[in-house]
Image (cartoon, rainbow, N blue to C red; front, side):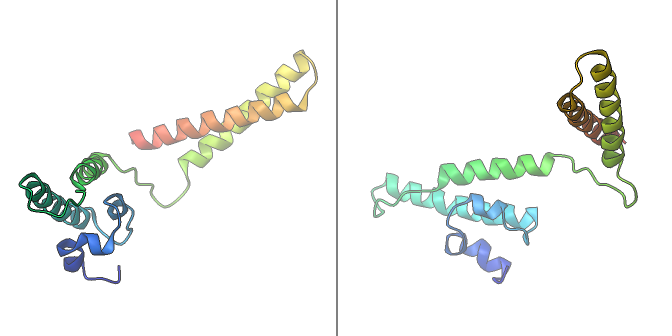
Length: 142
């Protein structure tokens, strides 16, 4: 971000058109995002109170949208992050093993039934998917 974080917190509407844009700013930490959104929410609450007392110019408040984005951020923060150590990828190994298994199964099915290269390709793709998912699950469990 080219702007100082304190400016983003003090004046979020100057830098972001919608509250959801705060989540997509890659240079912000989750704590900075939360602070920006809480500031935005406080501004929206004040505007809503002023509107309720007929003291505003009838502007729309972002209170509902900011609240939803804050919930999204909290959900993102509570989700575990899978870290992959440097070295070989268990997902890649799983995909390779799955592809071999799928191709082998496809060849057996092809030999038994009608010869078809499409069936072998489909079995390979299914094997890749299964192998990749199992590798990812195995890695996440560790």
